[in-house]
Structure formats: C-alpha cells, structure tokens
Image (cartoon, rainbow, N blue to C red):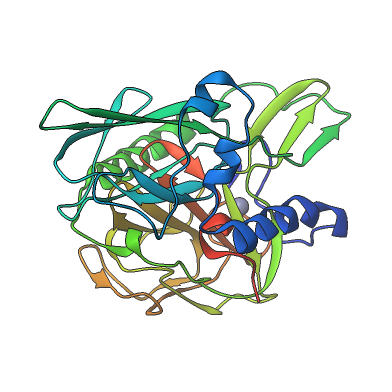
Length: 312
Ligand SMILES: [Zn+2]
C-alpha cells in the first residue's frame, strides 16, 4: 500500500523498473557472506580503523556478521562471548542466548552507523557500518498531490484499525524465523517495487512500503516466508489493507501481507516456513489482485527481496 497517494498497483512494471532490484540481487548472491567488504571498502578513517571480520575464521571473541549492508537491507551475526549489551547507533539491540542477532536498515537509513558490543569484562568492540544508498525508482507526476487530509468519517473507521496494528507490532514472540533463509510467499510478476516513490510537481508522496507480487488472479495461495507467530489476522477487511495478515518472525522482524481474499490462520497461531497462510486478493485499497508484502525490523521498513534473494 502507498498510504493515500496512490492505490496499490496490481498492474505491470515496465522492464526498466526491475533494474535496481537485479543489481541488488546480484549483490545478494555474490556478497551473501562477504558483505563486510562493503563496509571495509570505505576510505573513511573510522571505517578503515575497524578491522573486517572474516566469517569462517571467527573466534569467540569476534563480533561477526554478514548480509546486505544497504538501505532496506539487513545483517545477521554473532556477538562475542560474554557480551552483555549490543547497541546499534547507541540504541540497545536484542540478541539470542547463543549470541546470534539480526539488525536491519530502513529505506532511508545511512550512510553510516556503529555496532557496538560491550562485554562483562568491560571491553568494547565497535564496528562501523557503511550502509550503501539505493537508487529508488522515482516517478515524476505532472499533477498536484491530492489536496486535503483524511476525512473525519475515514478516521473514525481508521483509528481502531491503527490501534490493532500498533498492538500487533508491540507483541513480542519467541519465534525464530529471523534465523532462516526467507522463501518467496508466492511466485508471480513483481508489480510494485519496495521504496518506489511518486513526486507530484516537486512534492514527494509516500514511498511504496512493500513488494507487490501479482499472479493475475485472486485466490492464489501464498505461504509463510519463514517461521513465525500470527499477531494480526483481520477477519473483517481493513479500509486500506483489506484482509491483513501480520506475522512476527522474532527479534523485531515481522511481515505484513495485504489485500488478501482469504486468511488460513488465526491470531496466536504458530506457522512454519512454507505453510499455506492465505490467498491473494484485492481487498482494501488495491487496483488489482496482488500480494503486498511489507517487512519491518522494529521501526525500520525493509525490502523483502533482500531477504529472499531473486525470484527463480
Ligand atoms: Zn503494495
């Protein structure tokens, strides 16, 4: 969904729109476990002071990680033995009892931040993270942005929906899907890219917060991309999202599936990766049947394709 700027697209994407994704996908395949090279390649003093970790040669005293150091991307890693506090840009970040963690970077994150592990013996390990900028698809619209905010009648419907979404986001589960390699919930045509944005005579609209997948029909089943717990399953369609399904994958990572025609799970259900969880539709604000897959890590909006890799 695109907030109020434009209805979600079930239509087709022009070939040129795929290019940024293809470039990102190449980085994913080629750089899955060498993404530290991205950070280490910066000529900045602070970055060159931070020694690159080498996965595979890690000792228990290392702060190791790998993944996609770019806007909308993520890293997974392990804190050194004896770590009592892990912070990202000064904010505490959770990690599992075995030391594993995941962090991710908002669409507008960057260009750099620091990851710091503090150990019980007082020692501190700091890594500078250089977050590569993405080239978002920007569409210039020669028209004024629609004037006016939402009506009171709309907000009367909307407030309780937002309350449910916020309550779902506040739920913390012990799901471990965040450790898994994500799979595509359904395969089809990518009809809307994460991060794309319309600009109305110089005034930016809201960017597209997820990835749209269209199969050409309503009713196509889709599956859980990773293990998780269902934190919201809207039996009555929401005004914008329609039948909305939200899954917590643990450690702050979550998925939202919008516009569904049917939901096959209920709130509180545990789901396994690959399990049928719903059917594609066009409920809520949508111009055609498609699955909008949004992902968040805490408050950061992230790009699902950087977790799944390219669709094959
Ligand atoms: Zn969408």
